[in-house]
Length: 51
Image (cartoon, rainbow, N blue to C red):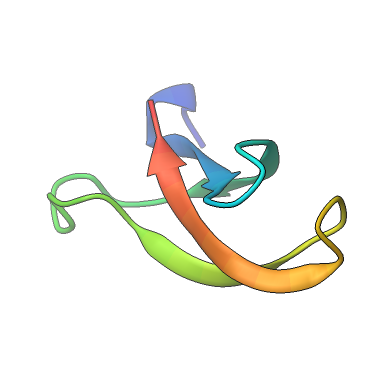
């Protein structure tokens, strides 16, 4: 898998990058938003895609 398909997911509350994932940028044009567990907040929070 190429590196240009990789994205970083950042916690909305503490602004830390907790997850890396892949996405098809040809199909999904807008930024990805997922509810994931943040180990620093110790809670399920919204994680948004960063550059």
